[in-house]
Every structure is written in structure tokens, then in C-alpha cells.
Length: 329
View (tube, rainbow, N blue to C red):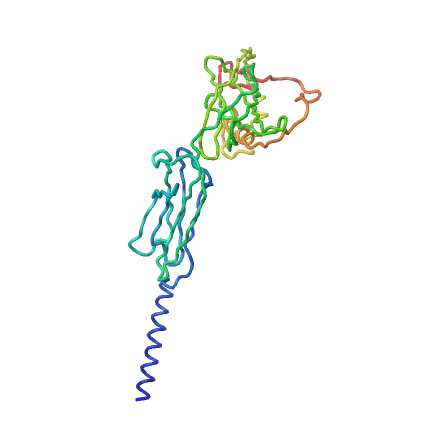
């Protein structure tokens, strides 16, 4: 009888160990909570806020997800999803919070995001975020009453907004020039430099100020301006064989795609594709400026340099007396 009892006890221990081992290796004994990550700041919600959330659980997998917003003790369900089977280790969600549709009012609210895993313990992760509902767009106040800008020139504008903004600047048609905030008379003031094309005109060029607050509310405001026409030079440049044979090999040696091309073909590439790439690079660099003036004094020509070309020159290139290409300097 004693031996029988011992065998029974051993059998129970073995069965329990096996069961626990199976539960462990099958990730049912998972003590880790799921992970919830937001792809952007969620402190303010405007008329509509796009939200990206990634839920993950590397052990037992996700079981259920929920997101809701609460204001004045009223709960609005934004997301609810359950997974009928195990194995869902990650889930990315994109959703929009529409303040008007949810009848949210301007003021504080709370967003709660919940994720639960598939373990025996039903581990739960909860993110509680205090948010501000703000559907009022910023107002823009122009400080420059008069703005005269040359064709192909640079404009400068100062303005203020009724509330702090995450992005401001100037649109010239669809081209955007970012503004930067500085202190003028101890008041936050935005300034922006913006450029006009050599073909800009009062009839065809639209210039407007832009502002976006942290809730995503956007505003545009017209600004007073007059574009002054300017006459730019136009000339025709003959590309001689001597010039092409001397200069074009320098580009061929540094650009593999030009190997085996004729000097004329190389020039065509340099005057179109390479010029466009350089322009995009310059625009990208200029778009990453800072709230600080990065120069002093006037821009001067290099000493003893000869002005072979001026800004805005319209050039037509000739090969064997025939037009081959054009550019604007």
C-alpha cells in the first residue's frame, strides 16, 4: 500500500510537471503585459485627429483591444476588437477621432486604450491619456501692412498667431516656406522668408499665410503684396566642341550612368536631370533651417570674380547653330 501511494504521488507530480511545462512552453504562463505604442502625440484633438496605434504581445499573443474617449462621464467607443484564436502577436490600427460626430465639446477629455493577452492570467495593459479637445483654428495677424516683392525676389513677412502653433509659414501657390518664431518686444512673433519665381505675377501668383496648431486645426490668411515686374536677360550660348570635350569628361568620371555617352548627351543630362536633382537637394536643405539667422551682412560677389551670368538669365544653348536646350540661372 505504501508503494502504491508513493507511485500515485510520483505520477501526480509528473502529470503536474508535464502540465505546467506544456502551459509554459505554450505561453499560457505568460506574466508580461502587452505593449501599446502611439505613433504621434495625443495631447490635443481638433475637428478630426488621425491616430496610429501598434499593439503587440510577443508571448501568448493578443486577445482583445479597446479604445474609448470619455468626457463629462460619457464614454464613446472608438475601437473594439477580439481575436478568436491565438497567434496574433501584433496589430497596427489607424483610426480617426471625429469630435463633431462624437459631439465632443472644447475642453478636457480622457482617452483610455486597453490590450489583453491570451495567457491564463489575462495580462492587461492600459494607457490613460489626458487630452484637450480644441476645434478652434488659430487666427493669423499680419504685421507688415505693405509688401513689395520683385519677380524672382525674396519676400519677408512678420506675423503673430492667436495661440501657439506647431507649424506656420507662407504658401506661394503650392510651394511652402516655413516660418520661425522669435521674440520681438518680448512677444512671440513669427517671421518667414519666401521666394518668388521669375515668372511670378499679381494675376497668377497667390501668396497666403498658413498656421496649424497642436490639435491639427489649420488656418490661412491673405497678406497684402504687390509683385513688381522685372526684366531678365536672355542670351544664346554656343556649345563648342572644344568646350564639350574639355568639361564633359569631368562629369563622366563621377557619374557611372554617363559612361559611353557622347559629350552632347552628357551635357543634356547635366542641364536637365542633374540640374533638377541639385535643385531638389538645395530645397531639402533649406527646408531644415532653424530659428536663428545664419549669416551677417550683405551677400557679396567673390573678389575679382567676373559676373558671367546673373540670376534669372534665360539661356538657350546651341549645338552646330541649332537650339539644343535651355535653362534659367
